[in-house]
Image 1 (cartoon, rainbow, N blue to C red):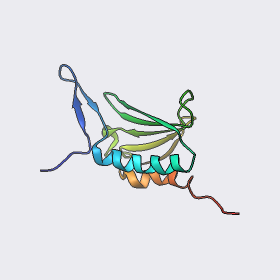
Image 2: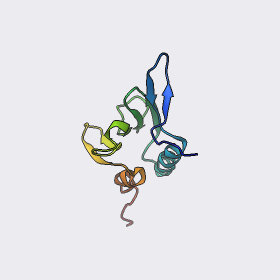
Image 3: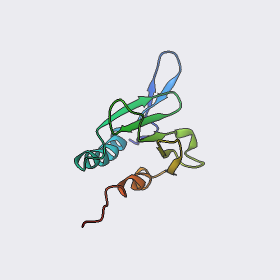
Image 4: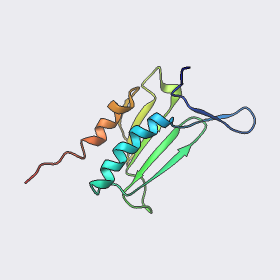
Length: 114
């Protein structure tokens, strides 16, 4: 049996919505846990829409998200289905390999020790 990384969820009628698969969430939550332990991030939110799924990362709950990890399956053959978007809407990294795309955020964990 093969799994699609598309992870559609059936909505009412014939519409489907995009969601993160369990393996994708495991990768994202692993990074999230390390960043929480480092004191960088404090909250997250997940949105599953018709064309994309978004994992939003917050420093504080009441703020705008610091980063958004987006999954757009329709862009799989073009720029890549995963993207990390900054607070200003700038795309920081895009590709089809989620781990490679998230490395742009892991660099924030590496700090110089005095």
